[in-house]
Image (cartoon, rainbow, N blue to C red; front, top):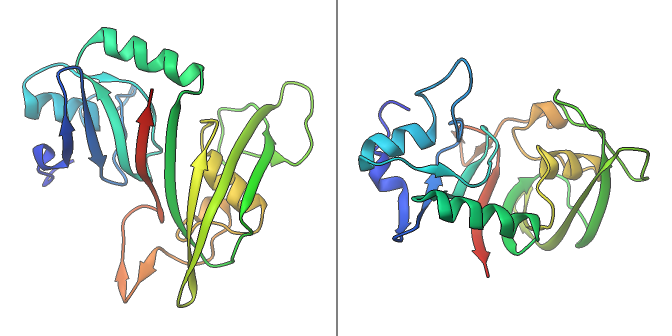
Length: 199
């Protein structure tokens, strides 16, 4: 968290919430062994006010995330998530081209990673659904646009791996190559939250 100008990560400010471009490799919220080195704590210091976590974004993933400025907004946003009225779009770089279309997998309930998914449902499985909307070739890589329908932990990472297109730099899910482009080595993995909308 050190060396990050947290005020510049805020791309939209509203009376009830802020939208932040979270840097990769930064946790969203505190844990038992990490109270301070996370986005919500650092943003709270920068703004001088308490902020509320409304959603999660993997530590290794960068991009847009919403923080509530009031408990009321936090509760409202969480209810929209449950009703699937929040639309989230991601982009990923992969080395193997996936086919466009909707993908449904079923995840093994577990607190351990990597998360395991199956093409067939089984007792107590968690449904994972996403759509690959666009695939654009960039030299030896493919830029993939993804609409996320459900929000399971590591869902996009596990599903893209399951269809043979692991995310660049994501060794946990089968990528054999670091997140590197044009001779530059980047932090995190090549997965970004690019838009969030709700109604």
